[in-house]
Length: 541
Image (cartoon, rainbow, N blue to C red; front, side, top):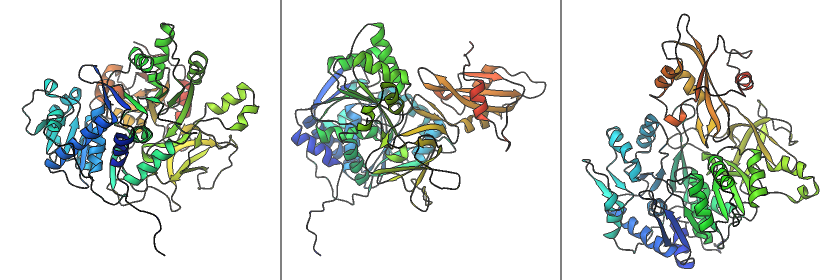
């Protein structure tokens, strides 16, 4: 049968082309990284700049399928790079600047990045590590000439200078919509980080799903504060959805303090905001301290780690805004669930409703979830039974980048590594982490890697790392140590020892010394016992 519908392969550059043509008056607002100056560009301006940068990359010899790394915060330049790179068929490899140096070395070389785009504040990273990246041909600093770093490195380009030399006309190539568009690595919680290669098609479908009314519910009338990083998991799809919908987007740059975020919300009448709990904690504290109210705010999407129940109550009671729990993973592009109220909750008491609203939420269309026992048998959806959380869908990873072995089981389900319940309405709640990972400020820290490193210390016999509750960061690592006989290591010596392989923010907040560590029946550290034992632990100076 002859095809009856058009079938032009989708290119993500179409998102910004559409915005430049049909939402040309809407804006992208950025607090610049270099000087905190706030600048505004229309979507039409952004489109022209994207085309200019695409021409610049082409002149530099960037080819289809090659990876171009970015180490940048949330700015209009980083957004432009997203579209210019993937739109011409290359792969935009977003890199988390908070990773430890050995992890940065691994992922840049594993991705075989040809060029790296970098914000000027991160330039010292490159000065210190560039010899570890033998295949990188050059660097593009996301700034203008006045803020260019002084360096002796060859092939260092200024972003704005490259743009100024190029035409604002560019013909986007046509290619398979299943081609890679962007690449993001996991945080390397066990072993080396793993790359997840998103495609033009998967990102489009994911963005459409995010735009549903019961998901982000975004419209062209919205002003959206994008705190969730562009360098991590597609910034939850908002940087594609915003231009498609025509919403005004605000990028906060490097300032994440409560005053700076409040200023943006208040001055630009932000209606929707998305980010990790630590940012919202600072925002609420600033508003409380200065007796201020965010009258424009309607929805606050929170992900990366669970928000405390008190945060949900504070946004509603003090600012009449709904805090919406969302859950997902790098392997899921990232959105899997979001917590919007179903009609059945309306007949419940406020207390009963709250018990559902603090969960991670219901799947969005395009994702399916289930919980299973150790043998893979599906468990009841009764809100009580705990099982391994498995997911599948059109934007869920099938195979990690550069790996031939599928990341899914024979039926196509991906094991998230989380333990969860699912209730009768489809609300999922994470109740534990199968591998005892520690999640601090929305970022993973490997307890196993920390333990293995600590037990290499000459004075340490055994070491177990756990996450303990923290009001600001959700969790912080605590290291429990059994010294070797006759040895008396101190806290600082162990932290100094760990610092060779862990970034500063990953280091434990405290080290406690014990005579023994509780074990399970199978000879493993009993992390559950340790978490109970140290649940009220106070950090000692």
